[in-house]
Picture 1 (cartoon, rainbow, N blue to C red):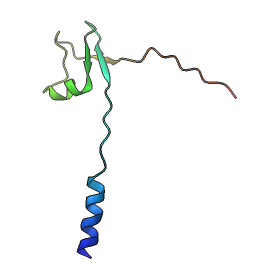
Picture 2 (cartoon, rainbow, N blue to C red; picture 1 turned 90 degrees about the horizontal axis):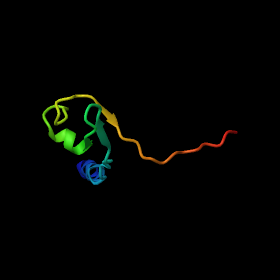
Picture 3 (tube, one colour; picture 1 turned 90 degrees about the vertical axis):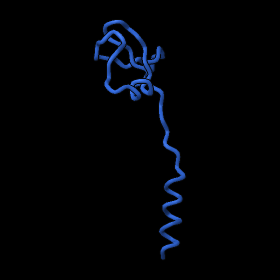
Length: 67
């Protein structure tokens, strides 16, 4: 019974965690920063000192057909 539990834990640990690269832009100066760079900092703050960021969207426009 212990072996079955160990095998189940091994299967769970092998699944990789997907991380997505998201870019944010400072609202004041426009500096683009990735989410990994922001997570390394002790506080969410731009190099200019401003703390408000907006998410940078891709330039692709999606069109959805109405039913």
